[in-house]
Length: 244
Image (cartoon, rainbow, N blue to C red; front, side, top):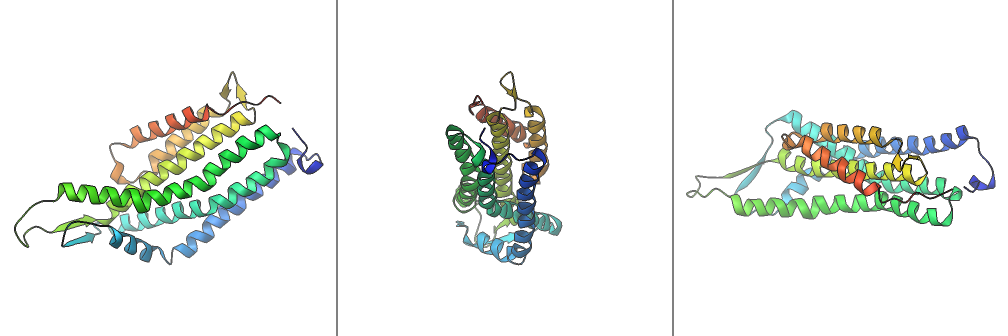
């Protein structure tokens, strides 16, 4: 590999620079979460009101105040991570690019672009296109018919929002798992064509998905967690191993 910034750096110094990027990113997540906490109620209210539902008279209900608080904090974390990702990926790219060969730079840039740009775009599509479409579809096909003013539609706001939170966590954890496994192969951390950290990363990702999925996904946690790590592992195997 080429020397970083035309000078050889001690491993500890190199690691310190990477740690600084991670530390600043983590601090950025905290700061963004703090400012978003003042807006999250309005954001959620406007989003719920924007859903097109066929019921002439419907209302949103919150059956558990504690679940509502948990839901808001989960959203704050997801939105903050999505907003800080472009900055983090750009800094990591600047950090690693000088030490890579031209053919390696293409793969590295593509991987970071996917995680730093595509994740926020997909999250936007999930929240503002996919979920409203699903809610509208199920609303049209599952309305309870009744006499006038006898049956009214009531929707659990926490369950609706939790649906999006689950999709979001699966996307974020799945893509980051794929990225870490791909980078481990990319930088030659392999033994017999297998990443040396593969099992540990898959176990950590499985646990994160299992623990982060909201109650709405009870009964499907293990299946979704297994599918997430399976697809992340399968996609990461497409990453080439460059000979140094």
